[in-house]
Amino acid sequence: MSFANEASWDRIARVVLGVVLLIVGFGVMGGTGGTILGIVGLVPLLTGLVGWCPAYALFHFSTKESAGTSA
Image 1 (tube, rainbow, N blue to C red):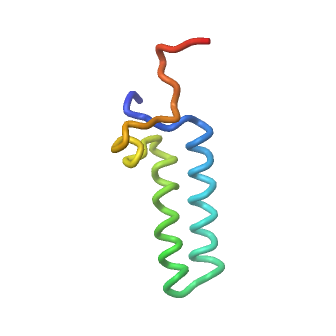
Image 2: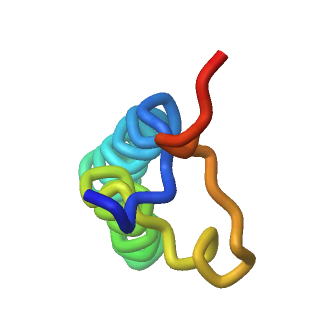
């Protein structure tokens, strides 16, 4: 996957954050605020699952090490 711009730790953090926001939004809060929070939780969840962040791409930023570098 050459278009990925997120490191493994970044992806894991996004998935965990997304799941927490979904649980809090749809399970704990409820109402309009809960729905909005749940929908907002989809963004980090999906970007974490895919491994590509559009904001990172927009600003030419990446947390993933390039394959050409070695220690």
